[in-house]
Amino acid sequence: MSNSAAIRHTVTQNRLPSALADAAPLAGRVFMSAIFVISGASKVAAPAATIGYIESAGLPLAPLGFALAIIVEVLGGLALIAGYRTRLVAAGLAGFTLATALAFHSNLADQNQFIHFFKNIAMVGGLLQVVAFGAGRFSLDARR
Image (cartoon, rainbow, N blue to C red; front, side, top):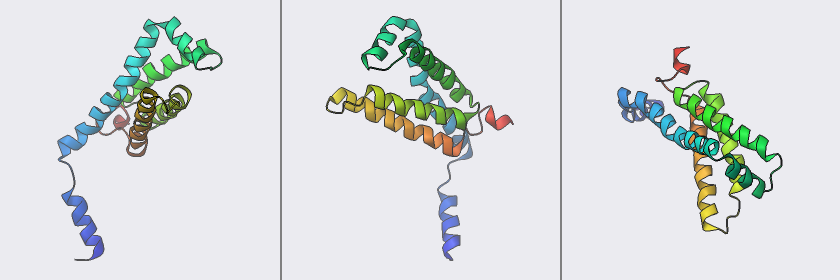
C-alpha cells in the first residue's frame, strides 16, 4: 500500500458516523455558548456590581465596558448557538475571552485566578476550533 493510500485508509477508518459528525458541532456550540449567555444575563441582573468589578480591575470607562460585555456575551453567544456568521463570531468571542483572561484573571499566584485564566485559555482554544472548522450542518451558515 502506498503512503497516500495508507493515509486515506486511516482517515476513512477514523470518521465519525454521519449523525454524530452532524450533531457534535451543534452540541459544542451550545455548550461553548452557555457560559457567555449566562454570564451576560447575570451582568444584566447586577449592573452596579459588574461595573464596580470592572472598575476594581482598573479598566477605564467601566459603564461602556459593561455594555460591550453584555452585547458580546449575549448576542455573540446566541449567534454561536444559531451558527450565524459562526467563524467571525467565534473569532470575536475568542478575542474577548483572551482579553478578559488578561484583564481580570492575570494574578496567577491566586489559585482561583489561575484556574479562571486557564479556563479562559481553554475556551479560546475551543473557539479557535470553531473558527477553523465552521459551524457544521445544523447552523444558519449551512443554509447559505
